[in-house]
Length: 395
Image 1 (tube, rainbow, N blue to C red):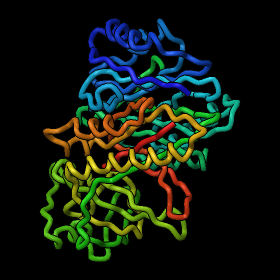
Image 2 (image 1 turned 90 degrees about the horizontal axis):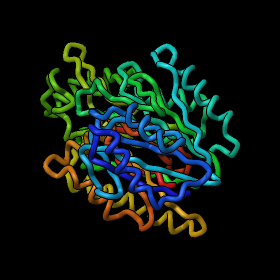
Image 3 (image 1 turned 60 degrees about the horizontal axis):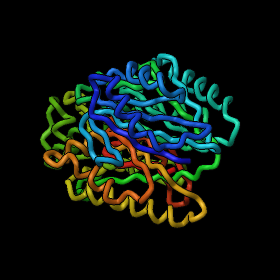
């Protein structure tokens, strides 16, 4: 597989934008199978962008809106259009989009789309990419559950599209069709050896720990110490019902969740809102009964170090596969991490550039939720939904 990351700041004059992108492709060699993944400023007309690109190229193009982007050329970009183009003679990319999704039909439609794409693969299925808009009735955990019901144990990587924190204008697209209520899915088959990494950036408060005793999906009602809100209040935290997500933007809850009968893994969970009368809290990911929770803090140094250690592990794994040439990194990092960087928004991107192996292209986005497999101590892998997490897929 060969790949290249190309970028333009231009989002208004799309003919000019495509000219600038094409110029960067002059020396790129296309092979039999090609896929493009695009991350765009929310003010981009992505349908017109793809139409303009398809005047010159016939490969499938998928993508999403993003509050900011990570790429090979500049590290961090706050606006513009960033494309990753992958091309191969012995790897297949089969892309598609679901029908419009509702809470009632999502499981069936995701299964149908997966089955239709799988029927087109002629090589062994190795990996699926998925990008979804933010939908109030369909959380990341639901999406993963429905995919796993159809495709387990296929590894799933991707994320939830982001916007400029309006939280109502996230979009994904497949070719010339953009949507706020459909999901884009790509199956990849052939001779690939994917590497996955996920990293947190936290300082744990070991004193604030409790076990969830009553929850439903992403709503936590009670812990061993009482109602969720009461437990936080007892630990000295000021809780009110307004602007909860932004008030806790420098914080995140670590939830130790069960993935099988004997193993637990830590995942990050952002607090979205609280119900003071009920004493409950809604998170941006599921928190099952039995999960042990800790309130953790983020800081810039931890964010930098988490990127560094993720790339260090990637470099070790690349070195352990000398007969396989890795060329491509997809990145999904949390928009909450981006907000925590405050006056240094380029810090994570700069670290990506500094650590990027020679000859490897990188393209990614800041998301409203990260989808990446997590490996247990026994070596088993599970597709999980993450918050405030930095993730990498290396191909």
